[in-house]
Length: 387
Picture 1 (cartoon, rainbow, N blue to C red):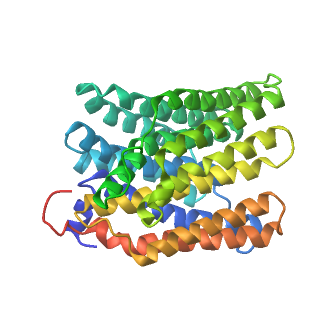
Picture 2: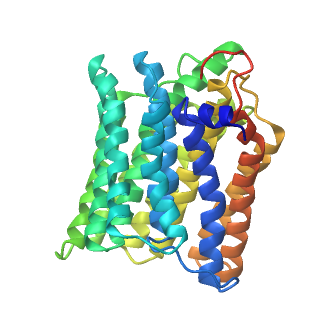
């Protein structure tokens, strides 16, 4: 990589953060799997596998998407150059420290500074042009950060359950911004039925309330109280699944099944529905928590991230929105990773072989992304325009 391409990586937020998110995903999951299965004698990451997936992988993808999208939403200049490098360093330092088995206080403080600065960088242009409809996204991201703060302060991994619920809420919020609109435009370009593709606002706030109630229930349990009644958690979870399924009906995702860059976005949000069902069943003691955790973590977060990174990188580097055939394989591999990991959590297959199979297919999915997109992310746009 030349000096010019290094500078180009810091010319727009999606470039460095998408590349880093995919690289972390490809390395961290096999590392964790080798640790817990004893296949390779490597140390477990100090902050833990779940933490790195949320506040390493997901946080990088959020930063790349949000700081890029805000430029379009508000017609503002991107965070770039030295400012972007400094922000990226706050994300990278904890990852490097974890790789060598260290997590001292300065490193934890660097990590805790990252998301507030991302929120501030996004909030400034949003507030300047008074795009108040973007505020729920920033509020959810702030709550997501508070779960990380609570985790570092207490060491209680259950705060990461709250972080995962907020990650799923972020998927819903981002999905509602882009998925119906992209689908409607694609259908209109091809003369398909598009006028009834919508995202009704009356379904949004009750669904957001479900996630906040589930988060409050996690906090109630962690902070020493008895926690909410299991039946109440189950009812709230199932209600959320029903509300989301009803909302997705208005998105008409089945009409875009021929376009993988679209159906993958619908599928990522749809995965939250069975994730919430499993959350309710776990509250009743009918399934293990790891079932809903991995259905949301892989099915909602990772599938959505891979889909968004694939589409945004094409669009913002001036390329046609045509997915490389190998990336369809990558999507399929990630779905296979989801099936294997949830099957292991439900006890349908042997835990160790299913987890190894899940890690292998996960690795291949993100390795394919790096194969197809690395050069695209560090090379200039073919049309010579900035971006």
